Amino acid sequence: MEKKQFQAESKRLLEMMINSIYTQREIFLRELISNSSDAIDKIYYKALTDDSLVFDKDSYFIKVIADKTNRTLTIRDTGIGMTKEDLENNLGIIAKSGSLAFKKDNEAKDGHNIIGQFGVGFYSAFMVADVVTVTSKALGSDTAYKWESTGTDGYTIEAAEKDSVGTEIVLQIKANTEDDNYDEFLDEYRLKAIIKKYSDFIRYPIKMDVAGKRLKEGTEDEFEDYQDEQQLNSMVPIWRKNKSELTPEDYEKFYHEKHYGFDKPLKHIHVSADGAVVYQAILFVPESMPFDYYSKEYEKGLELYANGVLIMNKCADLLPDYFSFVKGMVDSESLSLNISREMLQHDRQLKLIAKNIQSKIKSQLQSMLKDEREKYETFYKSFGRQLKFGVYSDYGTHKDVLQDLLMFHSSNEKKLVTLDEYIARMPEDQKYIYYASGESMERIDKLPQTEIVTDKGYEILYFTDDIDEFAIKMIMTYKEKEFKSVSSGDLGIEADDKSETEADKSENKELFDYMTSLLSGKVSNVKASKRLKKHPVCLSTDGDMTIEMEKILNAMPNNPNVKAEKVLEINMNHEVFGSLKDAFEKDKEKLNLYTALLYNQALLIEGLPLQDPVEFTNDICKIMV
Image (cartoon, rainbow, N blue to C red; front, side, top):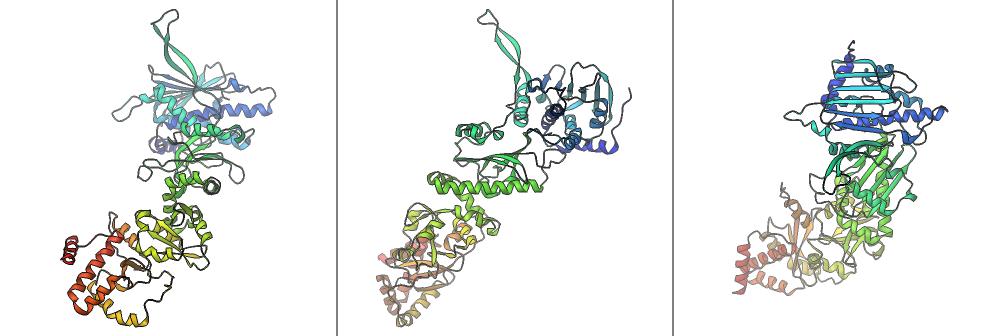
């Protein structure tokens, strides 16, 4: 029997594929099962136009048989089979796919679609097998043929015996090596797991003889071995069912079966899209944040199927980072797959699906915010931070997508409010959206800088997340209203009582200039405050960098040592100011002490570290003495 050689190009492709194209060996079983499903589909197509051929779906199946003793794994199907010419053309010429040719001549009917396109998946079998033997009998043929190969050295084809139409592939599994365990592909439980993972939704039954033990008939304590044929796949995926057939419990069960999370999903989105790209998807908004969500170990992405066959566990390209919390899957027959079927070409179809999914997720979140506020707030407490990161990232590119989904606690409501709700309550004379930053709402409530804003009856948004101010800097304005920190040098609010007259300014200029010189390098200016009512002192800032932003940036591992431009504001209506004026006229040493104390007091109010705590305590002691 003459051994035939693969074409030179085919031989090089086979070598490359065996060694590098597939990153996971287990993929071979998915490929062979998909080929078997294609073979059965082809009989179905023929039955549509051939009245003499009756397609009884119950008669068609795929069977997987593991023989540990002889180290063989067999995949058997009841599909259309292959003639000698088919074996020569489909298996002898790598990358020439019989399924692809058949697909071009037969448009999908009745929801059936040929999976295989490139014809190289079959050769992934050589990643785990020393010898691959294919015995096939074509529909309408009296003769069966056997194709056999040990890999790149070529193949043989000869007549064979086979009673029924269909194809049987026998893999002689490789021996274990020091680095590789090939026994796993003969293990019943491992094979079941691979089939369930990749081929659960193949439309024909995938069967396997499963070993077990049972009580011998007529005995109470004697057991015997037995084998029982089990169907391993569920066949009909939930996403191909009509939404009207499904209950919330069905979706929740699917969520847990797919191990998307241990929590209960807050919402599901079931998409069946027809148009420029055809796909089905089931997406979930989780209730709880995964423990590793903000770690390097967390992987975003949706499961990606092509005609019910799992292609990727985590297709990151289907989700933007700001919606990385979404779980679920996408199944499409429109996607172009590359030759390994494991990696997607980043083509137009994929981008269209991703864009559509982004829109669906945003719409669902907006609907939840509007109609199920309590549920949305539960979601937001888990993932609101991620939405803010989305606003900040990429220089604010995504702010228009996300800004209406943001929420912050409010001084008026003491609960989460949206930017739109804040705007709706603004008095006509209010120029800005005011916010205050701090470690907690309780801490912010005590900030001296909030006094004049709250006295005017203006609402303040509380920024307690480290990302809040950075995100808002990217938004800049919302509905034509600019954001303004209560610590900003110019609040746009004039004090009602003109307590500081021009004469006062002139009279106190020397005092403030002297205090500014004492605090050189610490503050840029000391001035009379227009915002303070009860408190004697506070810090404000000039420029875009706020004190809270300074704290956050300097707490990072690669401390950039940035500084906000600080201004020390003094309340001229506080009795402390009288002591300052008196010391300026009579005792400069005492004024130096007062200035240092007021500056350190302002630092403590802001939660900033004291440069010299010992000096601060000594200064307090001097006052007491």
